[in-house]
Image (cartoon, rainbow, N blue to C red; front, side, top):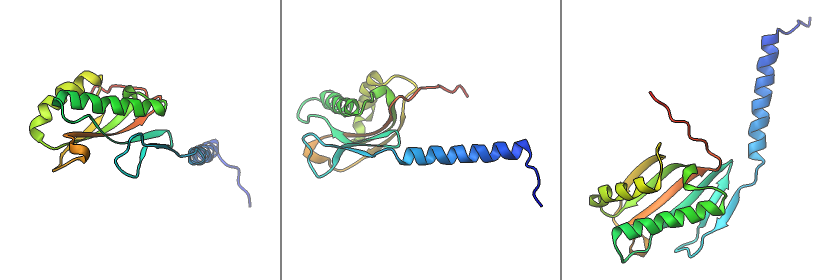
Length: 153
C-alpha cells in the first residue's frame, strides 16, 4: 500500500537531494596545482580545491632585518594568492613557523599591519631551522570571495 508523503517529508528529501547535488558539484571542480616559483624543493606553490586556496610555505628574504624578512614573506604569500584570484583579505587560516619565539611580539606587530581584523585563525610554531636560513615561514589557507562576518559573542 502506498501512502501519501507529507509536505515536510518531501521538503526533507528535496533538501537532502540538493545537498548531495551540491557536494558532487564541488567534487567535480578541478583541483588546480600552480608550480612554485623559485622553489627550494619539489612542491606546488599553491593548490586550489573545492573553493579553497592552499598556499605552500613562503619564506622572506633572509639576511636583512627581521621586519624586512617578514614583509617579503607576506609579499610572497600575497603574490601566490593573486595567482589564484585571492587576496590577504580572503585568508582564513595562517600557520607561522619561527626559528625563535623571542621574535613573536615583533612578528605580531608586522602581521597586524598587513591583516585587517577580524584576523584569520592562526597557529605559531617554533622550529629549529627553516630552508634558506630563513627565520620565518608562512603557510596559509584562503577562500576566494570569502566574506567576513564578525561575531560579537
